[in-house]
Image 1 (cartoon, rainbow, N blue to C red):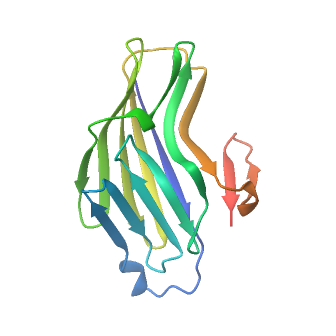
Image 2: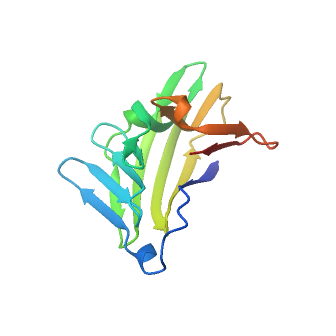
Length: 171
């Protein structure tokens, strides 16, 4: 069973010129197993840490990290336990000029396992995050983190619940 979600991280900046929208930064540091994505105006950046599992460890908005030390990760809970991307091992990284793909994000137990692929790209002043999740079998999930955002302070954001059950956060 395959599920996919697209997450858009975007900070509005009306002052970008068309020339600056192509000057993004995607840096991969294989030794520390981290990846940094930065939009052209440098008002938004994300650090992905896959050194011990897989999570977004930093979300800088206007040069200030908005995440707690738990960061952002994916996972699920069943009657048998709680499982997350923080426990994944042997993550594979593929990079191109404006896209990075983390695959082989595997977690779960013998009753249900998950294999995920995270794809990040930069489009103008937006960082796009596409999550592909495949379950090994059908199972009843008690809770799902698709993904789980852990902010340092909820006062950083203004937010609301949409009619479709989704959420909106604004800076």
